[in-house]
Amino acid sequence: MLSQDPANERSLLQVSRWTDRMKARRTHKEAEHRLRETHLLSHCSHAGERVMVAFPNTYSVGMANLGFQTVYADLLERQDVHVERVFLTDDPRSVESATRLSNARLILFSISFELDVLGVVEMLFRSGIPLRSSERGLKDPLIVAGGMVPTANPLALSDVVDVFLRGESEAVLMPFVDQWLNKEHLNKQSLLESLASLPGAYVPQIHGNHSWCCLPAVAERVDLNDAVPAHSAILTPEGEFRDAFLIEISRGCRNHCRFCGIRQIQGQPRFHSKEKVTALLDRHGQAVSRVGLVAADLGSNPDTMAICEAIVSSGRQLTTSSVEVSAANSDLLDLLRRGGQKTLTIAPETGSEKVRRQLGKLLTDADILNTASRAIEAGIPSLKLYFLAGVGDLLQDESGVSGESAAIVSLVREIAQRRQEKGSMVVGLSPLVPRYGTPLQSKPLPDRRHVQQVISAVRHGLRDFSGISVRAGGWFEAATEWILSHATAEMSETLMRAGVDTQNRRAILAEEIAKR
Image 1 (spheres, rainbow, N blue to C red):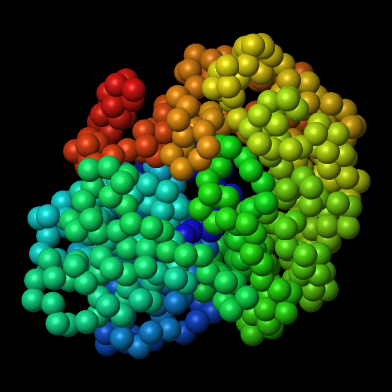
Image 2: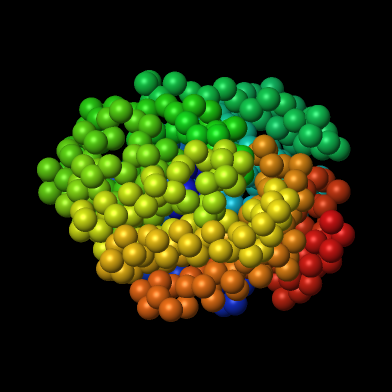
């Protein structure tokens, strides 16, 4: 069940969310969340089996995840299941009725970020559910997981999860639920055997989990021409996109960025037409006043401009998480400004054209500079720039720390000068993570000292610009993402300890990182 994340899965956001949660544990606030929500679909109390769609992170992060909302909405339309949502808290309970997670018959986890693998273990532990699949029987909840992370590599949780659904939810979810509802199974083994043959299903107890060779094929990608665009079922004032109606306009990517798994998993771009998007907006009428477009490659849809024009002309606000530089022409930026967007987010990744090409990102410095200038001319005052730290070490670039940091500083300074230092700029620096399932998967994690020196040098080089702030992700969190991305079943004991023992989690993970 692939998850579309409007934040485009930027590591900097993942790290900050995870760190915030590590610092201060929340107690459940189910009733408070429920009162502030706007439901676009009616939630009927069906008498069917209780299913909980679980997000192993906070409410605000989960509700900004379009994949999570889509699975919930699709199940809500079935008469034979009773579906509720649950998030990571000190006592995981559903938002709808404050029912404990352990009372579900089926738990569907949506996993978009590697760090949330630990959240799965933590939620089960806090709910009193046996962690190991082998220790749960037919009377226990069936634990299922999908999303970008297990589609790329499910082995980290292969001792915990009963069934992984690898592929797009339109292809895997309903066939799975239909088979699960079959009451002919006398024991859990027979249930798992029946599920193992479904499209995209990986059942570790049936297929094995000793290596990646055990994994059955990911389900075939769906034809979006026949699909309703994934969209929000619930609006909430909490999270990255406050009260925004999120809607997918394309899936997949044209680019060949070697550090990103989107193209490998989702393939070439597929589109939703303007007619399908506007039909959904018309259906919900005045309940939707703000629209967030979701796409890894916004400009790949030939209807992007027409969709934006239709949204703005209807009097609604318009927002996007990021815009591909090649798509950010003056007309689009003007539409975004008219739609109320005050910040443009782009990702140069590095300050060097040569290194950018080595990473598979075919952007010139001129492309980036012109886009930044057009944004301020269009009336969008704030600019966010995402860079990767440690690229020079990973690619063994001869320029070293000084060359990598100087190139970033030089590009940012020139952008600021082009913008005549108007508005504000945020420079985000995330350590490069060579994830499993990407062309860089065989590369080691960049050296810690190199990454820290690059970040320090960029901060120092931009210190004289009052309108520029630098935000950096931590190397330790990036290293944790890396080991989780490449994890096999051999790491399951460590991951279960880290998921359960939150006070000593960092020490447990540090010990594992030190082995690499």
